Image (cartoon, rainbow, N blue to C red; front, side):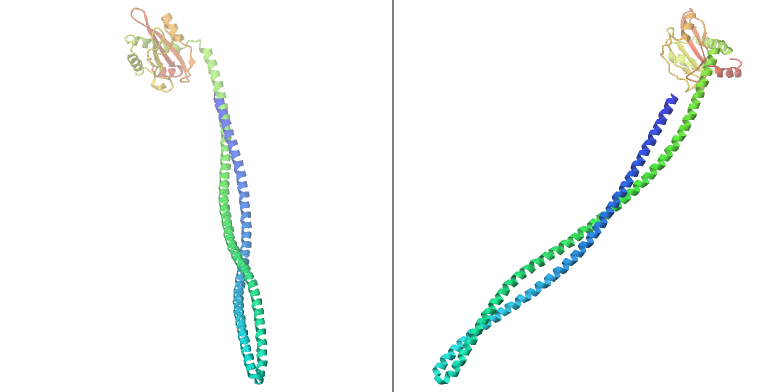
Length: 400
């Protein structure tokens, strides 16, 4: 049984050590994987940082372009206003040419009325009329050119306005993208810190597991040493028990002074129980316990009825308390030699010396029939003696 228990503990320690080794290996892999993840996050953060720089440059360029487009829009608005003024001026010129035409007509009429004296005015009137016609044509041409330029300018203004709106949207989008990239960089840094902390925890746990593994190996080595010493002790105990059993076997058939002393003490006790009602367990137990106040010869006392049924408790000497069980009441001992021999022969009986499994001492069992006044069997008294200790007790109590 000891070898089995030792082997079981050895297997258990080996299993614990194997589990710790597997845990250390897993933690090593986990720490390595955490390092790879942290490196990947660093790469993502660096790429995001570079991307954010490019986006900031783009946002700046788009902002400059938006400013330039806005400035161009201002110039175009000023040009449109100038064209409007030219249109007004052309209209005024046309109106003036029309007035000149009317004046030239009136002058020609007056010159005709004046006759020869008005010929000079007629010439002037014709020239004024030509000037008015030419001014009207130029005014129409200017108006047409200005109108065409205004139409084209309207298209340019619309395009510039659209470009300005688009450039502003692009600038705003670039700024938003910069903010998003900044968030990515911050999140990557936070994730890197978390993974770094987790990697540190894994490294600390790995060191702790390795320390535990080292301690378990030390415990395992010590346990193996204890196991070896236990095996040696078990082998020695087995050899000692075998030697004791051989010694007991060689002397069991011999009657010694211990047997005679045991029988004498048991017979003396049986006489003192002649007046005790063995049908009352309480009375019988009290009578047996009182014996220990007068004698140290007995280790265990109990009484059986004529059928071999134990009618008392196991009454144990205080010196052996805890080594011998105090139960036993009601046990059937009819098949035991220490009951059958005295019950059948009506004579005292003693067993060969044996090694008690309860106390571990060399013992002798003496049993005496309890007879009534009519010679009928009332029961059997059984008394166990510690043969090794009895010799010392007998030497210290010469009167026993």
